[in-house]
Image (cartoon, rainbow, N blue to C red; front, side):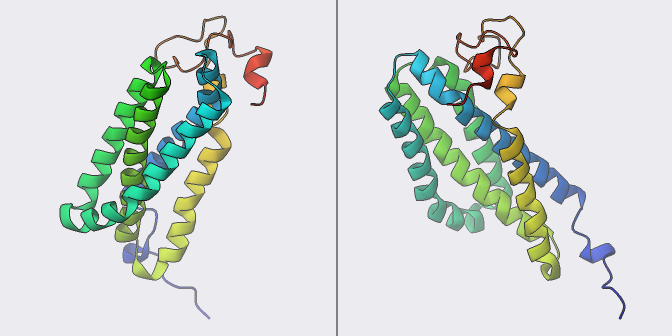
Length: 193
């Protein structure tokens, strides 16, 4: 029995699929990296463990609540438009995190981040289904999902691996890392939360 023809129209790994998968990996990895540092960041700014939980819940509830509306808008406004709006919203939220040192600021950013996450992740998964051959959607979905799984493996350790050696933890782009993490070799970076 001959194997199915996997060239031309039935190819999964097109440039568009690869770009979507890499963007998805980066979005998921930065999210996972944020999860590794947000609790210590909040605690360093005198917030409570309960408040850490509240910010996590707000993010998830927002991301879940927006998905049905995003699904409708994907068909009305187009997948790419919603995808880019979601990525822009996530970027705006990330830019604000270093300055959100009080609970209300973090809650508002988590809501914004949840909206962006709901838009970008839903649009990205839908775009993947649009660009792969219908006969190979299941296989393509598996490959695409693996990029998210890899992000879960590498994302949480990335903030600690980026800590400036001997720095205060407040270098550009790493302002979420609290000053109690002075260097990448410190025991605090390796400490589990």
